Length: 397
Image (cartoon, rainbow, N blue to C red):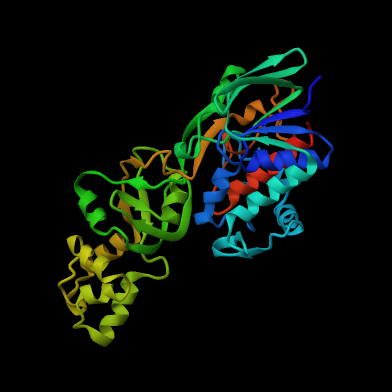
Protein backbone atom coordinates (compact mmCIF):
# COMPACT_ATOMS: atom_id res chain seq x y z
CA UNK A 1 0.00 0.00 0.00
CA UNK A 2 1.33 3.44 -0.92
CA UNK A 3 1.67 5.82 2.01
CA UNK A 4 1.71 8.85 -0.29
CA UNK A 5 -0.39 10.03 -3.23
CA UNK A 6 2.75 11.49 -4.78
CA UNK A 7 6.45 12.01 -4.24
CA UNK A 8 7.81 15.48 -4.96
CA UNK A 9 11.52 15.67 -5.72
CA UNK A 10 12.74 19.12 -4.68
CA UNK A 11 11.80 21.27 -1.71
CA UNK A 12 12.15 24.61 -3.45
CA UNK A 13 9.47 27.11 -4.41
CA UNK A 14 7.60 24.85 -6.84
CA UNK A 15 7.84 21.72 -4.71
CA UNK A 16 6.71 23.45 -1.52
CA UNK A 17 3.76 25.15 -3.20
CA UNK A 18 2.76 21.83 -4.78
CA UNK A 19 2.89 20.07 -1.40
CA UNK A 20 0.75 22.70 0.29
CA UNK A 21 -1.83 22.90 -2.48
CA UNK A 22 -2.05 19.10 -2.60
CA UNK A 23 -2.64 19.15 1.14
CA UNK A 24 -5.52 21.57 0.72
CA UNK A 25 -7.09 18.98 -1.61
CA UNK A 26 -6.66 16.17 0.91
CA UNK A 27 -3.75 14.50 -0.88
CA UNK A 28 -0.73 13.31 1.08
CA UNK A 29 2.69 13.86 -0.45
CA UNK A 30 6.31 13.35 0.46
CA UNK A 31 8.89 16.02 -0.42
CA UNK A 32 12.46 14.80 -0.83
CA UNK A 33 14.97 17.63 -0.48
CA UNK A 34 18.71 17.24 -1.02
CA UNK A 35 19.73 20.13 1.25
CA UNK A 36 19.61 20.18 5.05
CA UNK A 37 16.57 22.46 4.94
CA UNK A 38 13.94 23.35 2.34
CA UNK A 39 13.77 26.56 0.32
CA UNK A 40 17.52 27.15 -0.05
CA UNK A 41 17.22 29.40 -3.11
CA UNK A 42 14.22 31.20 -1.62
CA UNK A 43 16.36 32.12 1.36
CA UNK A 44 19.10 33.78 -0.72
CA UNK A 45 16.82 35.46 -3.28
CA UNK A 46 16.65 39.24 -3.39
CA UNK A 47 19.65 39.49 -1.07
CA UNK A 48 17.82 37.45 1.56
CA UNK A 49 14.66 39.53 1.21
CA UNK A 50 12.89 37.43 -1.47
CA UNK A 51 11.08 39.33 -4.22
CA UNK A 52 8.37 36.67 -4.28
CA UNK A 53 6.39 37.90 -7.30
CA UNK A 54 6.04 40.80 -9.71
CA UNK A 55 2.94 42.90 -10.34
CA UNK A 56 3.65 42.98 -14.08
CA UNK A 57 3.81 39.26 -14.85
CA UNK A 58 2.74 38.17 -18.32
CA UNK A 59 3.91 35.57 -20.83
CA UNK A 60 5.97 38.32 -22.50
CA UNK A 61 8.33 38.27 -19.50
CA UNK A 62 9.39 34.68 -20.12
CA UNK A 63 11.75 32.90 -22.51
CA UNK A 64 10.69 29.53 -23.90
CA UNK A 65 10.65 27.60 -27.15
CA UNK A 66 6.88 27.98 -26.82
CA UNK A 67 6.14 31.55 -25.71
CA UNK A 68 2.48 30.68 -25.07
CA UNK A 69 3.11 27.63 -22.86
CA UNK A 70 3.08 29.44 -19.50
CA UNK A 71 -0.21 31.24 -20.18
CA UNK A 72 -2.37 28.38 -18.93
CA UNK A 73 -0.56 28.12 -15.60
CA UNK A 74 -0.70 31.88 -15.11
CA UNK A 75 -4.43 31.90 -15.79
CA UNK A 76 -4.93 29.19 -13.16
CA UNK A 77 -2.71 30.85 -10.54
CA UNK A 78 -2.42 34.60 -10.94
CA UNK A 79 -0.28 37.25 -9.26
CA UNK A 80 -3.35 38.21 -7.24
CA UNK A 81 -3.58 34.58 -6.09
CA UNK A 82 0.04 34.75 -4.93
CA UNK A 83 -0.55 38.01 -3.07
CA UNK A 84 -3.73 36.70 -1.43
CA UNK A 85 -2.09 33.40 -0.49
CA UNK A 86 0.79 35.05 1.33
CA UNK A 87 -1.42 37.70 2.94
CA UNK A 88 -3.62 34.92 4.30
CA UNK A 89 -0.59 33.55 6.13
CA UNK A 90 0.78 36.84 7.39
CA UNK A 91 3.01 38.07 4.57
CA UNK A 92 2.22 41.60 3.46
CA UNK A 93 3.96 42.75 0.29
CA UNK A 94 5.66 46.02 -0.49
CA UNK A 95 6.38 47.10 -4.05
CA UNK A 96 9.93 48.04 -4.96
CA UNK A 97 11.52 48.76 -8.36
CA UNK A 98 9.57 47.80 -11.50
CA UNK A 99 6.75 45.92 -9.81
CA UNK A 100 8.90 43.69 -7.58
CA UNK A 101 7.05 42.59 -4.44
CA UNK A 102 8.97 41.89 -1.22
CA UNK A 103 7.69 40.96 2.25
CA UNK A 104 7.36 44.02 4.47
CA UNK A 105 9.60 42.19 6.93
CA UNK A 106 12.30 41.91 4.22
CA UNK A 107 12.94 38.36 5.47
CA UNK A 108 12.99 35.50 2.99
CA UNK A 109 12.74 33.03 5.86
CA UNK A 110 9.20 34.29 6.46
CA UNK A 111 8.25 33.00 3.00
CA UNK A 112 9.76 29.58 3.68
CA UNK A 113 8.09 29.45 7.11
CA UNK A 114 4.66 29.79 5.48
CA UNK A 115 5.26 26.53 3.61
CA UNK A 116 6.96 24.57 6.37
CA UNK A 117 4.22 25.51 8.85
CA UNK A 118 1.45 24.62 6.40
CA UNK A 119 3.08 21.31 5.50
CA UNK A 120 3.20 20.44 9.19
CA UNK A 121 -0.45 21.42 9.69
CA UNK A 122 -1.58 19.50 6.61
CA UNK A 123 0.41 16.36 7.41
CA UNK A 124 2.72 16.70 4.44
CA UNK A 125 6.16 15.22 5.01
CA UNK A 126 9.42 16.95 4.09
CA UNK A 127 12.53 14.81 4.34
CA UNK A 128 15.81 16.71 4.04
CA UNK A 129 19.33 15.42 3.36
CA UNK A 130 17.76 13.10 0.80
CA UNK A 131 19.50 12.67 -2.54
CA UNK A 132 17.46 10.86 -5.17
CA UNK A 133 19.57 8.40 -7.10
CA UNK A 134 17.05 6.94 -9.55
CA UNK A 135 13.39 6.96 -10.51
CA UNK A 136 11.58 4.45 -12.69
CA UNK A 137 8.09 3.74 -13.92
CA UNK A 138 6.30 0.72 -12.46
CA UNK A 139 2.99 -0.96 -13.20
CA UNK A 140 1.20 1.03 -10.51
CA UNK A 141 3.22 4.26 -10.46
CA UNK A 142 6.85 5.11 -9.73
CA UNK A 143 9.72 3.72 -7.71
CA UNK A 144 12.07 6.26 -6.16
CA UNK A 145 15.49 5.24 -4.87
CA UNK A 146 17.31 7.73 -2.65
CA UNK A 147 19.86 8.12 0.10
CA UNK A 148 18.80 9.74 3.36
CA UNK A 149 21.82 10.86 5.36
CA UNK A 150 23.84 8.33 3.39
CA UNK A 151 21.43 5.41 4.01
CA UNK A 152 19.90 3.81 0.91
CA UNK A 153 16.10 3.84 0.84
CA UNK A 154 13.30 3.40 -1.67
CA UNK A 155 9.56 3.88 -1.89
CA UNK A 156 6.69 3.84 -4.37
CA UNK A 157 3.91 6.29 -5.19
CA UNK A 158 1.26 6.58 -7.91
CA UNK A 159 2.45 10.04 -9.03
CA UNK A 160 5.86 11.67 -9.31
CA UNK A 161 6.64 15.39 -9.40
CA UNK A 162 10.09 16.57 -10.43
CA UNK A 163 10.66 20.09 -9.12
CA UNK A 164 14.39 19.78 -8.55
CA UNK A 165 15.35 23.13 -10.05
CA UNK A 166 18.06 23.92 -12.56
CA UNK A 167 21.84 24.03 -12.68
CA UNK A 168 22.48 27.28 -10.72
CA UNK A 169 23.93 27.24 -8.00
CA UNK A 170 25.99 24.10 -7.29
CA UNK A 171 27.00 25.14 -3.77
CA UNK A 172 23.28 25.44 -2.98
CA UNK A 173 22.78 21.82 -3.98
CA UNK A 174 21.79 22.41 -7.60
CA UNK A 175 22.22 19.44 -9.95
CA UNK A 176 21.05 18.32 -13.36
CA UNK A 177 18.81 15.65 -11.83
CA UNK A 178 15.61 16.95 -13.45
CA UNK A 179 17.22 16.99 -16.87
CA UNK A 180 18.71 13.52 -16.45
CA UNK A 181 15.40 12.13 -15.25
CA UNK A 182 13.62 13.60 -18.26
CA UNK A 183 16.13 12.05 -20.64
CA UNK A 184 15.85 8.71 -18.86
CA UNK A 185 12.12 8.80 -19.61
CA UNK A 186 13.03 9.59 -23.25
CA UNK A 187 11.75 13.17 -23.00
CA UNK A 188 13.34 15.98 -25.01
CA UNK A 189 15.40 18.60 -23.16
CA UNK A 190 15.85 22.03 -24.70
CA UNK A 191 19.48 23.23 -24.70
CA UNK A 192 20.35 24.86 -21.40
CA UNK A 193 22.55 27.85 -20.54
CA UNK A 194 23.14 30.20 -17.59
CA UNK A 195 20.62 33.06 -17.52
CA UNK A 196 20.34 36.26 -15.49
CA UNK A 197 24.12 36.09 -15.24
CA UNK A 198 27.03 38.58 -15.34
CA UNK A 199 28.93 38.88 -18.62
CA UNK A 200 32.71 38.72 -18.93
CA UNK A 201 35.02 40.94 -20.97
CA UNK A 202 38.45 39.78 -22.11
CA UNK A 203 41.08 41.03 -24.53
CA UNK A 204 42.27 44.57 -25.13
CA UNK A 205 39.31 46.25 -23.36
CA UNK A 206 39.32 44.13 -20.21
CA UNK A 207 41.61 46.46 -18.23
CA UNK A 208 39.39 49.46 -19.06
CA UNK A 209 36.32 47.68 -17.66
CA UNK A 210 38.18 46.32 -14.64
CA UNK A 211 39.45 49.79 -13.72
CA UNK A 212 35.82 50.95 -13.47
CA UNK A 213 34.82 48.17 -11.06
CA UNK A 214 32.12 49.40 -8.69
CA UNK A 215 30.79 52.14 -10.97
CA UNK A 216 27.04 51.97 -11.66
CA UNK A 217 25.34 53.72 -14.58
CA UNK A 218 21.65 53.82 -15.42
CA UNK A 219 21.47 52.64 -19.03
CA UNK A 220 19.35 51.10 -21.72
CA UNK A 221 20.86 47.79 -22.82
CA UNK A 222 19.67 45.92 -25.89
CA UNK A 223 20.33 43.44 -28.67
CA UNK A 224 18.16 42.29 -31.56
CA UNK A 225 15.90 40.31 -29.21
CA UNK A 226 15.18 42.49 -26.17
CA UNK A 227 15.81 45.83 -24.46
CA UNK A 228 16.05 46.72 -20.75
CA UNK A 229 16.49 50.06 -18.98
CA UNK A 230 18.06 49.67 -15.54
CA UNK A 231 21.47 49.99 -13.89
CA UNK A 232 24.62 48.39 -15.24
CA UNK A 233 27.56 47.63 -12.94
CA UNK A 234 31.20 47.56 -14.02
CA UNK A 235 33.13 44.70 -12.40
CA UNK A 236 36.66 43.33 -12.34
CA UNK A 237 35.63 40.71 -14.90
CA UNK A 238 33.23 42.76 -17.06
CA UNK A 239 29.61 43.77 -16.57
CA UNK A 240 26.79 43.02 -14.17
CA UNK A 241 23.82 44.87 -12.68
CA UNK A 242 20.10 44.40 -13.41
CA UNK A 243 20.14 45.50 -17.06
CA UNK A 244 23.07 43.20 -17.87
CA UNK A 245 21.52 40.24 -16.05
CA UNK A 246 18.31 40.78 -18.00
CA UNK A 247 19.94 40.98 -21.43
CA UNK A 248 22.16 37.98 -20.65
CA UNK A 249 19.12 35.71 -20.94
CA UNK A 250 18.78 36.81 -24.56
CA UNK A 251 22.50 36.83 -25.39
CA UNK A 252 24.34 34.13 -27.33
CA UNK A 253 28.15 33.69 -27.45
CA UNK A 254 29.71 35.72 -30.25
CA UNK A 255 26.98 38.37 -30.26
CA UNK A 256 27.31 42.05 -29.41
CA UNK A 257 25.16 44.00 -27.01
CA UNK A 258 24.56 47.75 -27.12
CA UNK A 259 24.22 50.30 -24.34
CA UNK A 260 22.74 53.77 -24.22
CA UNK A 261 24.71 55.33 -21.38
CA UNK A 262 22.36 58.33 -21.20
CA UNK A 263 18.81 57.11 -21.98
CA UNK A 264 17.23 60.19 -20.39
CA UNK A 265 18.36 62.61 -23.10
CA UNK A 266 20.48 63.40 -26.15
CA UNK A 267 24.12 64.11 -25.17
CA UNK A 268 24.64 66.35 -28.20
CA UNK A 269 21.70 68.54 -27.18
CA UNK A 270 23.10 68.80 -23.68
CA UNK A 271 26.49 69.80 -25.06
CA UNK A 272 24.85 72.43 -27.27
CA UNK A 273 22.88 73.86 -24.37
CA UNK A 274 25.87 73.91 -22.02
CA UNK A 275 28.26 75.63 -24.41
CA UNK A 276 25.79 78.46 -24.94
CA UNK A 277 26.28 79.29 -21.28
CA UNK A 278 29.77 78.00 -20.59
CA UNK A 279 31.68 77.18 -23.75
CA UNK A 280 35.00 77.17 -21.90
CA UNK A 281 34.00 74.16 -19.79
CA UNK A 282 36.12 71.11 -20.55
CA UNK A 283 34.31 68.09 -21.92
CA UNK A 284 35.82 66.17 -18.98
CA UNK A 285 34.11 68.42 -16.44
CA UNK A 286 30.88 68.36 -18.42
CA UNK A 287 30.86 64.55 -18.38
CA UNK A 288 31.76 64.51 -14.68
CA UNK A 289 28.52 66.39 -14.08
CA UNK A 290 26.60 63.51 -15.65
CA UNK A 291 28.63 60.49 -14.54
CA UNK A 292 31.07 59.75 -11.74
CA UNK A 293 34.45 61.46 -12.00
CA UNK A 294 36.08 58.06 -12.42
CA UNK A 295 33.89 57.19 -15.38
CA UNK A 296 34.38 60.62 -16.95
CA UNK A 297 38.15 60.16 -16.66
CA UNK A 298 37.90 56.70 -18.22
CA UNK A 299 36.02 58.11 -21.20
CA UNK A 300 39.21 59.99 -22.02
CA UNK A 301 40.44 56.84 -23.74
CA UNK A 302 37.74 57.28 -26.39
CA UNK A 303 36.59 60.92 -26.28
CA UNK A 304 38.42 64.30 -26.52
CA UNK A 305 37.86 65.12 -22.85
CA UNK A 306 40.68 67.71 -22.73
CA UNK A 307 38.89 70.02 -25.20
CA UNK A 308 36.43 72.69 -24.12
CA UNK A 309 32.86 72.47 -25.36
CA UNK A 310 33.11 75.50 -27.66
CA UNK A 311 36.00 73.99 -29.61
CA UNK A 312 34.30 70.65 -30.32
CA UNK A 313 33.62 70.19 -34.02
CA UNK A 314 30.32 68.86 -35.33
CA UNK A 315 32.08 65.62 -36.24
CA UNK A 316 33.42 65.27 -32.70
CA UNK A 317 29.99 65.94 -31.18
CA UNK A 318 28.48 63.32 -33.50
CA UNK A 319 31.18 60.86 -32.46
CA UNK A 320 30.46 61.57 -28.79
CA UNK A 321 26.76 61.05 -29.40
CA UNK A 322 27.39 57.74 -31.17
CA UNK A 323 29.69 56.54 -28.40
CA UNK A 324 27.39 57.47 -25.50
CA UNK A 325 24.10 56.33 -27.02
CA UNK A 326 25.36 53.33 -28.96
CA UNK A 327 28.16 51.88 -26.83
CA UNK A 328 29.09 48.49 -28.32
CA UNK A 329 30.27 45.54 -26.26
CA UNK A 330 31.14 42.02 -27.36
CA UNK A 331 31.18 39.87 -24.21
CA UNK A 332 33.57 36.93 -24.08
CA UNK A 333 31.16 34.79 -22.10
CA UNK A 334 29.24 34.55 -18.84
CA UNK A 335 30.23 33.91 -15.24
CA UNK A 336 28.53 30.52 -15.50
CA UNK A 337 26.00 28.66 -13.43
CA UNK A 338 27.64 29.49 -10.09
CA UNK A 339 26.82 33.18 -10.63
CA UNK A 340 23.59 32.74 -12.62
CA UNK A 341 20.22 33.43 -11.04
CA UNK A 342 18.45 30.82 -13.17
CA UNK A 343 18.86 28.36 -16.03
CA UNK A 344 17.60 28.97 -19.55
CA UNK A 345 16.11 25.94 -21.33
CA UNK A 346 15.12 22.66 -19.69
CA UNK A 347 12.48 19.99 -20.17
CA UNK A 348 10.84 20.77 -23.49
CA UNK A 349 7.37 22.26 -23.30
CA UNK A 350 6.44 19.99 -26.23
CA UNK A 351 6.66 17.09 -23.77
CA UNK A 352 4.20 18.55 -21.25
CA UNK A 353 0.48 19.28 -21.15
CA UNK A 354 0.32 23.05 -20.59
CA UNK A 355 -2.90 22.74 -18.53
CA UNK A 356 -1.57 20.10 -16.11
CA UNK A 357 2.25 20.00 -16.58
CA UNK A 358 1.97 16.23 -16.84
CA UNK A 359 4.17 14.38 -19.29
CA UNK A 360 2.38 13.54 -22.51
CA UNK A 361 4.32 10.29 -22.73
CA UNK A 362 4.51 9.10 -19.11
CA UNK A 363 1.25 9.11 -17.17
CA UNK A 364 1.56 10.45 -13.65
CA UNK A 365 4.90 12.20 -14.23
CA UNK A 366 4.96 15.98 -13.74
CA UNK A 367 7.64 18.64 -14.15
CA UNK A 368 7.50 22.14 -12.66
CA UNK A 369 9.59 25.16 -11.79
CA UNK A 370 13.04 25.91 -13.13
CA UNK A 371 13.73 22.51 -14.72
CA UNK A 372 11.07 23.29 -17.37
CA UNK A 373 11.92 25.41 -20.43
CA UNK A 374 10.25 28.52 -18.99
CA UNK A 375 12.67 31.24 -17.85
CA UNK A 376 11.51 34.55 -16.42
CA UNK A 377 13.01 38.00 -16.16
CA UNK A 378 14.79 39.26 -13.08
CA UNK A 379 12.53 40.55 -10.34
CA UNK A 380 10.12 37.92 -9.02
CA UNK A 381 8.98 36.48 -12.35
CA UNK A 382 10.58 33.08 -11.81
CA UNK A 383 8.97 32.78 -8.40
CA UNK A 384 5.57 33.41 -9.96
CA UNK A 385 6.22 30.58 -12.41
CA UNK A 386 7.28 28.32 -9.54
CA UNK A 387 4.14 29.07 -7.51
CA UNK A 388 1.89 28.72 -10.53
CA UNK A 389 3.42 25.47 -11.75
CA UNK A 390 3.32 23.99 -8.25
CA UNK A 391 -0.35 24.90 -7.92
CA UNK A 392 -1.26 23.48 -11.33
CA UNK A 393 0.46 20.16 -10.67
CA UNK A 394 -1.23 19.78 -7.28
CA UNK A 395 -4.66 19.96 -8.92
CA UNK A 396 -3.91 16.79 -10.90
CA UNK A 397 -2.17 14.54 -8.39
